[in-house]
Length: 276
Image (cartoon, rainbow, N blue to C red; front, side, top):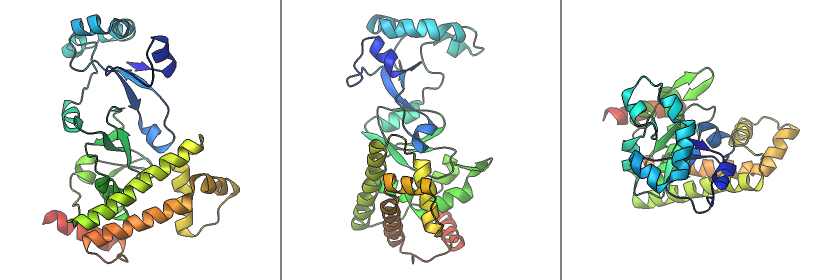
């Protein structure tokens, strides 16, 4: 189902004006390293006849590259519906249908980072996709309180934390914030998302993992290597730190908590709120 940009162009499609059957596609690495353009053919909602008649070029691509393998699949539905994804995520499609963007995080990653993806983007199974477009939620999820909760309630794959959506997200008690508090968190979250994307656009080799490795060193007061200093300047990591610090302060304020709580005190309060 996957298409590289050159294949899309080869089939006569304009990358800036794609049909709804060619969708941008992102994997977990795109979220923590750098985004790389890749696409998939998505015939969700199409019968085989509709796909063949309305998009014959794409249909032929799948007939050649997908059908032979699907013909050998043990699952009857996948053999018979060979032009469709094996998993179509109908619940997520319905939940995100009216949105312009959604929140995404790499399921397994060293740093727990949340970002916005355009609603047209198909997320890989290694991405936890959250059908919310309000930056208020991005801000709360990106704050120290939620990251501590996610690190403690999630599992680990080797040395990398795993974000279990049913525990890390589903059981997390969001603060009962006022509209003024929500507006502040929303504004900071938009700044955070824009800052990271802007710096990566300016520096093609800059990754979010590198930026957050340097951020960790800044917070710990550790000396920066020459490589760290380059990343610091390219990513404007001191500004990144300031945005996170301001966001933490805003979310603590929304929770009505003092900002100097220990991790254990934060977790105890979250568990109490969850039980309530």
